[in-house]
Length: 375
Image 1 (tube, rainbow, N blue to C red):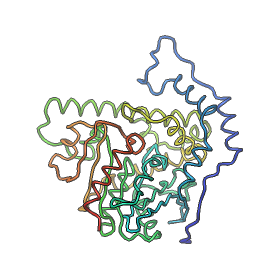
Image 2 (cartoon, one colour):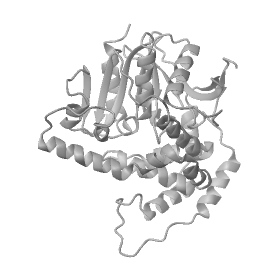
Image 3 (cartoon, rainbow, N blue to C red):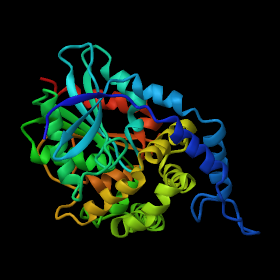
Image 4 (spheres, rainbow, N blue to C red):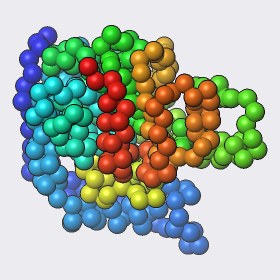
């Protein structure tokens, strides 16, 4: 094992781009059924997949996206036998607070491209930003072996911050990144100055499973909860499959770019707010999965998490802040009924991918939360 931190640049071989172009040119698409409405009720419509695939082939500029990543300092290091890829962007403000940003699924480090610059701007709210690819995602591949899930990732990220010289740091994330963020505070409370998580209205669907329901929900509140649960039941097939049979879907995600595209694009549509996700940013994310073959290993992460001995939630006394997007009053009523979370922000804009959808709102909320926790 070595503690060496090595510089890294993304440079996908041209042969990989040519292969992707060929596969997209030769792709087969489902035959629409006459009479079907071209809506999203059964998943992403064939016409949408075809249009995205054509743009991916003919209009999308991967080299431009590659250059956007490479504008930030990137590195790799080996922790617990696993190669970890990460961005490390230090602010010109010498006493900036170190901030670990952790992405979720089906996302990547691309989620944070629009917030890194503002977060590192010199000033009283400046951060030194560290953005790792979760093991099995992006360039933190291939997996070194089984067992990479929430707890092991948390320990690896804590070690990463140690190697970078950050004894105390802030943590932020959404989705599985929120799980890592919360667990960092629970396991390393003396090192984490505070945790900030972003979520969306859909999170209430898990109430009753992972959190107890508050007493006395009104008829309107119960109706909203029931609707969220129904949406989750209709859309959770991806999680059930990957949590139990990840190798099956891995074959399609690794061999078919159109399959990988549809798999991710459907969730981006379902979970984003009214403004949606920029098409190029979506395809940047899909391309990262495709070029690194991480559709399979990301699925494996969800399998490992589902079979781990611990859950996604880890209580802690470390100060915590929440920013909920595409929200309504029922979210806090259910998720924080006693209003123990001192910093709670509700935004009607955005959705699940806050750093992509509403970067300015998210940056402002992160700054506001950590302002009172700075040394």
